[in-house]
Length: 177
Length: 433
Image (tube, rainbow over all chains, first blue to last red; front, side):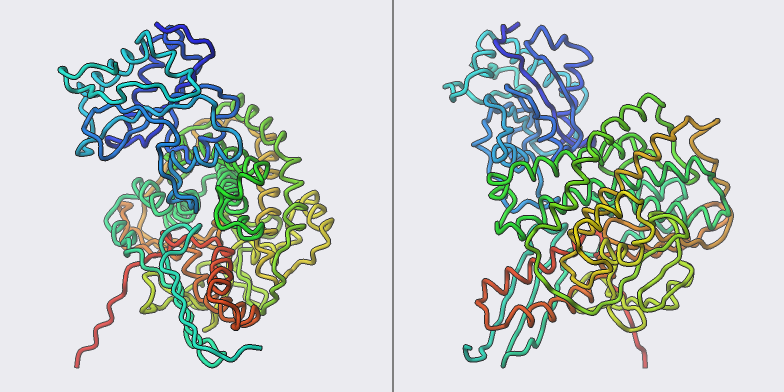
C-alpha cells in the first residue's frame, strides 16, 4: 500500500481485441478485483481506443499512470516511460492519433498532468495473452503499485533514477527496484 | 511577372486526411498538364467479403470500413436490407437512428474543423503547433468530439466500430436516466456550438468561387440524415433506387478509388452541398445563427465547407437534444425482428462527408448475393481534381513550389476526404477476340 500525497489516476487504454487489450484488461481487473484506494488510486478507467478522448479524460488530473501495450518489447515486459520519451507525429490525422499524439496535444494545451508516467506492457510476438499470462501481468502491476517507493515515483515531477524495466512473465526477473 | 516555368510537384503522402493518398501536379508554359489525386491504399474488397454473409453479420462488417463514419455504413446497409426484406422498424427506431447519426456528425465534424482543417486557416503546418497558441480551439474540438462519441456509446455500445445496431433496430434501449444525463451534457454544450458558427465565419477563409454541382439528399420536412430523394442544384430529383441510371463509376489508373460522375460531370457531396440544397430545412435557431454571420448561402466558395460543418454541428447537437428530450423507452424490444426474403434493396444516407449509397441483393435465407457500396470520397474525387485545377490557376502558377504544394493540400483537406473508405476493388475488363 502506498501513501499518496495527491490522488493518482490510472487509465488503461487499448483495443478490446487481441494482445493490445492488455492495458484495458489490467485496468478492468484493478477495478473489479483489487481495491484501488488501497493502492493510492483515486480513479481507475479503462478506455477503448480513446484517441482524442484521452485529452478529455485528463481534465483535472494532476498525477497519472497510463497503461498501454507496447510493441517491440519482450512479451510481458513492464517498462516505465515518461511522455517525453514518446515520439509523436505532429501532423495528426485520425489514422495516426495514438497515445503519443494525444499526450503531445495535452502538453500543448496545458492539460498534461504535472506528474505523468506510462507503464508499457510488452506485446512480444503480439499473440493474444493467455488467461494465465493476464493474471500474472495483473498481479505484477498490483505488486508494482504496492511497492514502498511507488508513490515517490508517481508523484515526482522530476525523473527518478529507477530500474525501469522488468519482465512480469519471467519469475527470475525482480520487479522494479 | 516571372517567366512561365516547368513545375513538377509531388506530395508523396497527404497529411491530416484519413488514409493514404498522394498528389501529382505537372505544369508547363503556365498551364496545368496533369493534376491527379492518387489514392494508393490497397483495395479493401468489402463488397466481396459481404457475399454469402447473413444479414445479421452485415452491419458489423461494414462498420469496419471506416473508423470515423461507421454509423453511416451501418445506416445505409440497414435501410437497404430492410427494403429488400420489406420491413418497417417503426418510429422509435427511426428516431434513435437519427440520434445515432447525429453523434457521428458531431464527432466527425468537430475533429475535422478543429484538428484537420484549422491549422491551414490559422497558418500552422500541424495541429500540435497550433494547439500551443490556440488551446481553447483544440479543447473545444476535443469536448465536442467526446460528446458525439457519448451519443455513439449510448446506442452503439462503443464509439469505435459500434456493435449496438441490428437489422430492424438496436440490440438495447438506453434507460431514460442515461438519456437525461446525456441531454444535460448536450444542452450545456449548445452555446459553444452556437458560437462556433460565428467563429468559423470570422476566419480568413480563401475567397475561391467556383461553378460546381451540389448533390445531397432532401427530405420533405427534415434536414437530411437517413432518408430523402437525391437532388442537385442542376435539377436532379430522383428516388435513391434510380442512382445507377444517373451516376456512373469508372476506374482511373492512378487511383484505387473509383471515380463517380453525374451525367458525365464531377459533382460535390458533403456538408457544403447538403447545406446549399437544404437551407430551408435547418431548425430556426441554427438558421438564425448562420444568417447572423452575413455569409450568403447557397455558397459557391468551396472553403465555406468549414462553415457548413460548423452549422451542421450545431444542427446535429440541437437535433440530438430534441430527440433525447422526447425519449421514452420502447414498448417491448428496441427494434423489430428481421424476416428474411429474397429481394433487392437500396440505402442512401448522409455520411458526414456526403451521400453513401448501398445496394444489396439478398436471397431467401437472408444472405447477401451481391453488394454495391459507393462512398462519398470516391464521389468527390473528380470534383477534388477539378477544384485543384481551378484553385491553383486562380492562386497563381507563378508561386513557389512550396506555396503551390501547401495550397493544393489545403484544397484537398477542405473536402475531409476519407481515403480508407474510398479504396475499392479494381475492376477487370477482359476483351477476347
